[in-house]
Image (cartoon, rainbow, N blue to C red):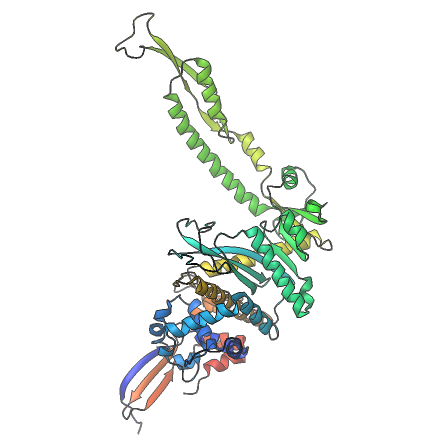
Length: 549
């Protein structure tokens, strides 16, 4: 006869995708690594390594204020995720705040470099091409300096890339490899100059690689036009590829040239024209690139600009017609001046009209010979096809430059095309799916530590995603994931980890208390596609979900 167990209490506890992140920390020894570098100064029931794991879990789900972490964990299977003995109340705001303080005391950029050095001993992180860029993040609040030392993070008004000019901000330098894995980071003042900070970060990473004695001292650094200044290219001793600024006269000259012998690139929609240059006293290879997609996009932009000019010009011409002038030359001069404001339009022949009005102070119709003649002018505009055609001649092109003269034009283009990886990294940090950007910290020092957590989260995310995609490619396999809409599923050979995490959302544990106080745990059965994901991630991740209950 089957025995029926009567439950006194039943509790649902979720664990979602968090065991994947916990398995990553265990696989690469990050718990011990962080605890060795950031020892506890006071007694707490959880380590800095466990707190950093919680920060990463939170960053890759939703940003939570420090004082709400305990509430966040109450519905989670905490011992399963963070280790035996861990409890929700241990992760309070004081414990989590002390971890942030320990990070900034060690130095967030130095700690990140240590993490990279530790992981590179176990993970193949390609350092051949390193992409550098900066971005900034806005914060709500005053953030007074309060006598902070000059070395502290200065949160202030700066270039508002998010258009929020009313908010103060801090900046972040990020360097990633070709796979989008962060290899260096540095927090910057909100009003810092990209031209100065980007070369400082590149130089610091290059020196760190040289100190390790790695072969990657020959890494090629790739940056956007903020790097390309006379001082920067002359100062930086490493190899680089950059986007030469269109404002340079030498670049303008080639952008305006027609009928250059472009060579079709292996990259679809691109063609190149190479030349030698010694701009800034540095021997370089310049590559003028024509992009079909860029050309179409800029033509559409010009068309919208022409439409707007026609609308604005017509409005100004209407108001011009209401003005009066003392003589015909003045009226024609005003029309001619207005016609110069719209380079994509053609001004039609102005029409001048006259009428006689009373002198100032007199009323009624003027008597013969007593009135004053005044002039008005009407002007019409139309689109100028020739001006539009001329404006299209210099678009769809950009200039790349490198000091590595061993590279061919095709290699330079292919390397620079990967610059989007660092830009995707910043979009990841700022997008609405993973709420990494809301900041609930009052201390600039803790915001420095938060920047480390954000970049570490991106590093963990990128490594796991690349591991999964590599395993799927080797086995020629796909993962069936939800695409757009609840009923829209498709097989994907390169799934994003965000989509993979969504497959784990409803996983959890049921805790049942029976008579006598005995407790039973029942874990959600893993769906076949989830088991497939864990299989291709590797045995450490499979074992993380093989819980003996």
